[in-house]
Image (cartoon, rainbow, N blue to C red; front, side, top):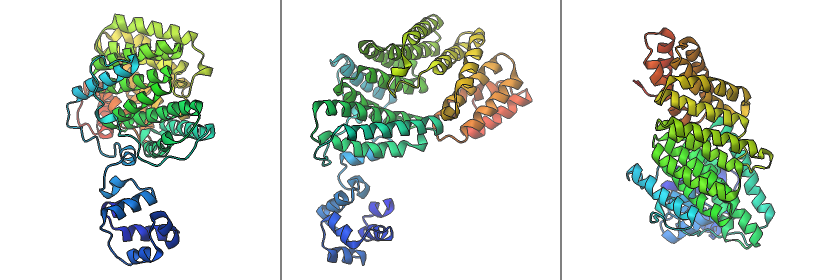
Length: 440
């Protein structure tokens, strides 16, 4: 169908619809054509007029961009990152600065660094909205987001990203509908979290421009919904993108903006999540004093937090995740500062892995990878290689680019120990899995 739309072969489009049980009468009603016109097109008559093509696209619910017509908002949402942003040739550091300016303007309510909407800001909604919506409609968006987030945790962002983006296309139509102020505010929050999930699944599949796009839109909606806690969560996730890209300075700036929102929200859990991630950024920069100080604060905030009352977007951060962050930060310090930090990393990671269920496959993979690195650093190569193989086996069923990227430091450590047969076998297996011939 996508191929037929791209070629504007409307006869092929209509034949596909007929094959799947859509009658000529239904096609005519949807597209505003007569049945005789539909019949002629089915027989091979070409449709050339722009306005007719646009009317057919609108009637069938097809983003016009699929047909090479004007690029409307529905197209932007649905295909935000099937290919990366048209701005992808722009230097990554410039994109990070633009996003930081946007985030600062939203978080503190002023254009601190000068604003630039960048590639994340879409044009005003053009899609006709439902006449009126109520709380039931918003709850449907929230339920869909919860279900899709569960798929992301268990199978990776690639398992559900297209569904998340399609859900956004439908959900954003409600922004133009009539509703009470209470419903509107909750809708802003629901759509902000859906964009938040779209950004996270885009990140997990390696679509960084799309992630920035969705996180940027999520920030604006969360602010409209007056949900500072969600603003903090969105900024934590964008900071994680920058950590993944080995830009800890920029990540720290985003985390610190998130910290402002977290403190404004009064949520100990949100503050704790930001502290733990700031610690990770400092660890990547080799600043162990700051990293350990922030980890200590993260523990304190978590001890005061009420996880049971946490919203869906923050509830993932439980005792297991705190242990995982402690282990991750100490693993980073073991690589950047001193291998002595493996003594804290190993028990923390082991505890986290033991607490994750089958619904947290990706998190288990990440922690097994970090645990394997620590054992290699400690000289326990046999056990480290065994853990590395477990991480690979667990990750083979995931649709996540991020798991492969997170294994590159492990591959580097294994390559350094190629004189050991277990390390050599692990390095070769990692090279095949990550598609990276050598990390040395």
